[in-house]
Length: 204
Image (cartoon, rainbow, N blue to C red; front, side):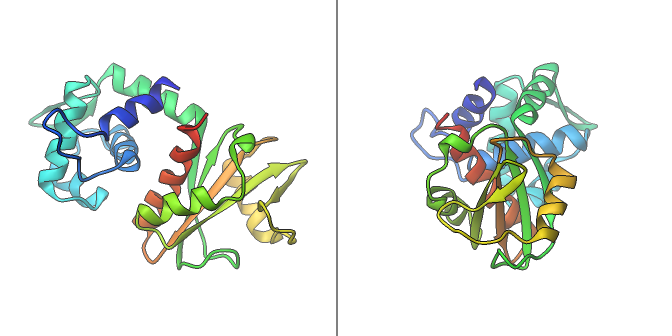
């Protein structure tokens, strides 16, 4: 789990003792954005992350110091190390936007699959709390077992339409976990889902 240890390190307090104004989910999203929008500038990255430009400046500096990105007049780009880090991260997680569902409470939903992590799930409360701290309205934890989705601690029939969409978009396997973050805007839903997913991976 070296890739996830890197995210954790980048979101910890700096030598000065001041805690960064961003979390692991922001670091993950920043790397994904720079990887998909090579040449992006700091101002646009700030907008995409929902963070102030000063905070993004700090994050970019730390990514540079780790050798994950480089910048020029043409914008920011992932280094070979950054590309490898992103590839390693995506071996364990996949994600997709999701329409409104009857099992979530927010207008916007974002689903993150965490491979082979069913054994790390108890009631789903830890994942919900991680999503709430990240600014989401909540999170629903699903375990994929014997071809079906199950919500821990709840014995309910899972909606077929939602199940079909998740299978089509994320291709879950036996023992995979999906976290659906929900909020009143897509960014908060995404950061909530990714924070909950990283909470699982940090325990494994």
